[in-house]
Image (cartoon, rainbow, N blue to C red; front, side, top):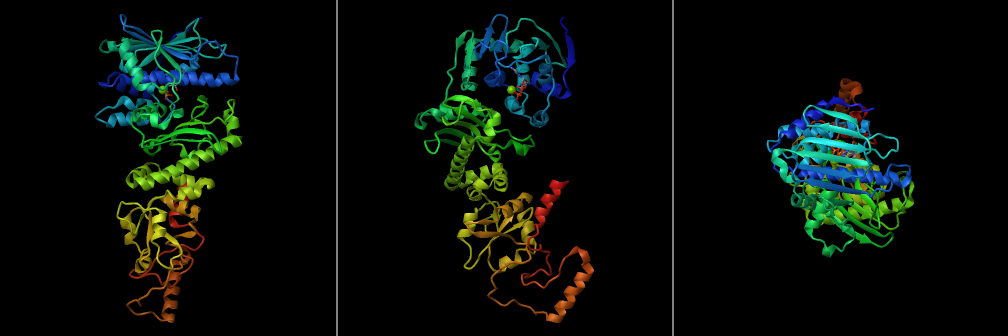
Length: 544
Ligand code: ADP
Ligand code: MG
């Protein structure tokens, strides 16, 4: 029995559709990239499922994407033999949005006067881009699960959709676009071929247009560096990272020992976590001899490198490794170590070669490296070299490394000093710097609350202790010149500090005469071994 029903789109979907349907966006052709990317995802999911599950619908169907164009009726049909969707999944996936990206998308679209729908895929709502060119969309889908029923989903993108059962469907999804009157060009073979070449050259499944295969499945990372054009790299990056711009950094390397590795890694220009998106998923695909083992593989890079996109190919990884066994595989952890080490070395080289560009990187992704220092002992020393801060001797807005600092330490200076404060001005107006200024000692300025947590975790750099400038017991060199002004005698000091302690009571542990102040009358310090005040702020935020 067929149960057709009409359902309303979720409010957020309506908002997105409203933006998309009425858009005057000129690069409407990106809708095809989104549909092909969904088809490729569905094929990949099926391929992965089928590794361990043979009880699937139509196992013999080749994994491919087919596009049929009807130039007379103005219809574009895209079909895949992927994992398919059940009725519930259709309702869930093409009628509601369960993730944070959509809100950010709606907000960005509302704010930008130049509406750039190119970004739609990055917000996890790429399917709806098809309503830029289609006045009506039919989706026919049959899940890979043997007992599932085929389903049909139909909508004109305004307010609601209809869903019902459909019989005799093969496994996968067929999406039929009835093109808008001003979008008939998208039923033209040459147009569609050009668009696929531009946006989808690296899709790892065969794509056919009106029967003809038009892509060659490429493994760019196995080719010789010297033979790959800049453009090809960039196109590959856009494909693998679903990005619309060029990467900030690129590292293409191969190694034979200790493991055979071919890797092509990219750093994006922007850190999406910073814009309030949910946590970035791992961005590196694992291959063995050009065969995809796992997309967005966990464990190939440490979690704190989740912003890195690309491919790692190693012959030493067993083909049948599963997501579960990945975690415990010693081979995978050796691979992770090797790739991470090489990548950190690369960053260090880049920082030396082009410090301005590295600062750009640091502003976007420095937070991840700090996370690495606090959570991953293995690469701590390499990571420490990559840290950047302002300091009392840096130009405002310019950053220094710990190496810069240690190179200009004073004779007899043993420790590296840092102090936390929201801005340079606030730190410099406070009393903590006086003792250091008087001795011409450099102090690192940490502006983020996590910084003190990171530095106290790091503990030392090249055998020099990292010391917060607000610690009570500071081992500072004696001052050369005698200070102006009268010294208080012992008795006066005793009665003054005693009186202060009485007034302040439990708010302080101790009141002491200090040798470190020059102009300020008093300063609040941290007891040794206690958290710095900014670390306390971090802990408070965590415990809330
Ligand atoms: P995203 O791909 O980022 O998840 P989309 O809006 O492009 O966002 O697609 C929404 C969801 O719809 C997908 O996550 C997937 O579950 C489902 N979907 C879309 N197209 C297909 C397809 N061809 N086959 C199977 N599932 C699909
Ligand atoms: Mg998508």
